[in-house]
Length: 499
Image 1 (cartoon, helix red, strand yellow):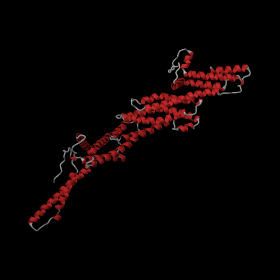
Image 2 (cartoon, one colour; image 1 turned 120 degrees about the horizontal axis):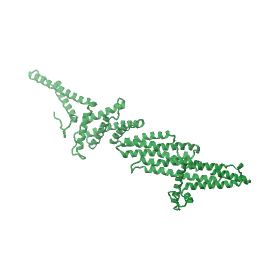
Image 3 (cartoon, helix red, strand yellow; image 1 turned 180 degrees about the vertical axis):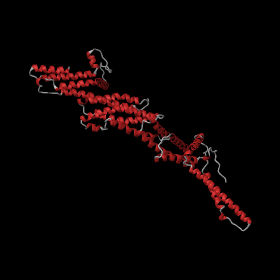
Image 4 (spheres, rainbow, N blue to C red; image 1 turned 90 degrees about the vertical axis):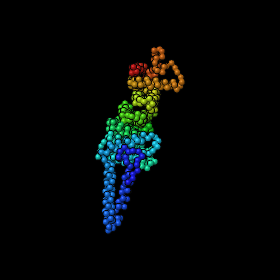
């Protein structure tokens, strides 16, 4: 019986082609048919009888040989899903991969395919996947399983250049299907771990590495991004922040917005100081060997949450300006000012894409600062517009005096922030108009003790302007008293309140 010889010596018995078994079975079937007793002619001669007996013995031997071959083939088939064969099959696959690697990029010959080993290897992976899907096995990300998946990935990549060969194409289709099935399983497991136990980055990292090395980087990144974005949003919302559109902010009463600003400030600081650093660490741990992927995912995560928070802050800056809103707006301004350096620290790579995020935060902070300046102007307008035709009984402290002085006292609690706001505003005005005076941009003294100090501190100059307006307003109201004594008492009471 003649068998076709392989072009390259095989490294294992499992590397022999399955066509040999098929050829052998066909040969045996033909032999069985030609040696059948029914086809023999029996004559009443000793010679014919002996010939018939001899042929019958040949037929029996043929049947025995065929049964042996069938048994061998069945044995091979029955071992397709034998877990004990995995180490030897893995060695066979590795040897074949080594052979393909040694041929270079443009091999002159196509090596014989160890299709039996490949089929059995793929079948074992399918068997393991079925165990996981049925719940009979728990460790989806055991080193053994992930190593087998990694080997299947390399095998799929190695078979691809030879896909024009029918045998190679058949093996490629099988390994590709198994690999895709394994990736689907790992993707589901990756998603579950990200939601349930992201504090175990080692398990997550092993799955991510397997998916990325198998060419499933996009799927891995998307699952991570979506899962962590949902978890991150939930954590932000737990701090009290509620997503609200700019249009909704414009139509919401200020009393309601005050409560939302308190929640926003808490959520914003919590996100930038706690949640974002935790997500940065998780990205670095899971994608330890793929820093570019870690940077990209974290940037998208941070941006998605940050834009929601910044939209609310920008909407507040666009609301109608009034003095009563000053202190809540200052709280938001301080939160942005304090958190910008923290955001910059999270993007340690010099070529990272945090520039846009930092620029957007700075732009919103600047618009809030402009709103603060406008609110002080509103206070000045309210003083100028306070016109009363009837004097207070007994020359008491005027309500406007109480309101303005208490307002300025509260504003002094934000002294450093207000100084920064007015200094930035003055610098912006000078750069816009192109005019420069004796004032220094850094707020330092310009010579002289009194006027120079006042000019170098825009907040102090603004406070003096407000108190001067209030003093003039009280002098005008004092004239409403016909009694000079009451007039003097009124001015004295309000003057003492000033101090």
